[in-house]
Length: 306
Image (cartoon, rainbow, N blue to C red; front, side):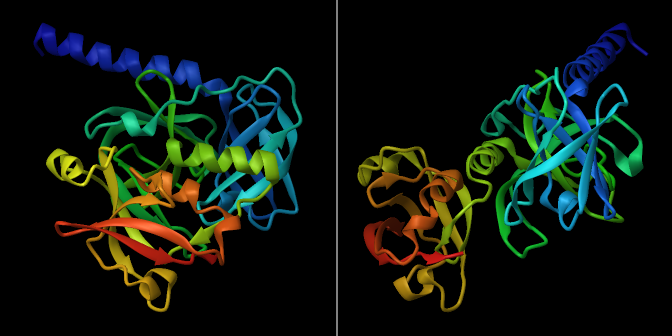
């Protein structure tokens, strides 16, 4: 092996080891009695921690195993099956909180590290790269979560709810699913989406939403098109499907429409749309601004409660 190859390998190893040292103390094993177990990670020093909704669903009692192997009682703070996210609170002091990064800053090929408890093996570290961005993933509730990170970092049962971390030791995703029987095909909910849900669960215990009835993906907005239509942002939400008898169908939305605003509020991505579609919008008329072909249109729509 050439000397420069050894140096590169050493640099990669140092990066993974540094990330594990930095984030490992915040990672938890979550036992949902009597259903099973998964992973989680602490986000505040006073004990709020994130995991997957499917990890805690139906649990009569929760316990958390800390980095040092000690156990602590945990209580469910809030649960959102639509994004497969949940918040628990760990009854322990002196907890190490993970640093949160930006999933929007990720690029395909970036190194990522997954930390969790696959098959109950405490604080297992796997590493890989971002394989793709902007994926969609259907949760067990049937809801389609958009803007999901695909990675080849190995995930197994028990990894669910653990952190996906960038090379700086910042959490950029919540590990959620792996395709059984496949190799190197795993998914994490981007932290930019997750942090909004987490904040709401801590504050209110649940997430109230309204919906349009579309499948969607983030797309860049060509600069020439943005200038021509005086759209201030650099991105838009592309409609990929329209559900039958949904608000979107009744409003006449079509596949390929680019959503750029809702009630004059800019929409540059799916996170913007999710943030704007709060529960109090359900049943109230709203105005969508869309680009269709070379035209900018205003579409009247009434979001439905979820």
